[in-house]
Length: 222
View 1 (cartoon, rainbow, N blue to C red):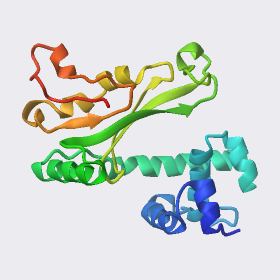
View 2 (view 1 turned 120 degrees about the horizontal axis):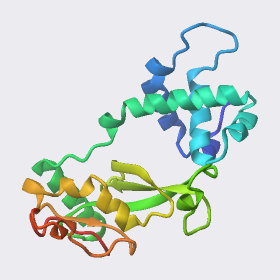
View 3 (view 1 turned 90 degrees about the vertical axis):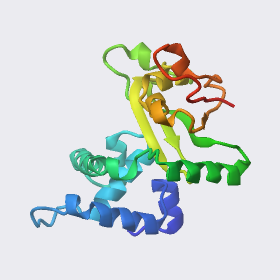
């Protein structure tokens, strides 16, 4: 059954035209190697994976909705995930050339009048099944098990950095300090500007914690 535009947005979080572009992008990786009547098409695999990402449900629930076996759902989700991951460097990057810095600064000025802003940062909970070990570490403040995933984007909502190593109990500011983001603002980039975050991030200059690092290189907080 072909989904309407409204169904695509509600179930997959993407418009139909974006869905078609994504299918074309991943086609080389998802094309069935053997022609079988039971083989799932590229569009079906992508739809299954996006539904799983969007709902945060279990693979069995996605399989039931798609009227396929749990193993087929698992295989589709794995194939799409691997294909997307192989393209991560192409789409997730934080270029620090002077041209890009000026472009981002101008973008945030146009949106909100904020000066010298290089990006917006926050963390989000990604739900998990209850881990078999150290389950208490994954319990977040909203009382469900998750990872706490850090994302940073520019003025056009393009994701520039992802950090998904820490459990749900980890504080946003702690994750930022452990991530590779501060290092981007060191050295020759030390005067490039600010990151904007919510109250989970204190107004800070993390490089100042280390006397060997340049001072006044980056800040977060609102």
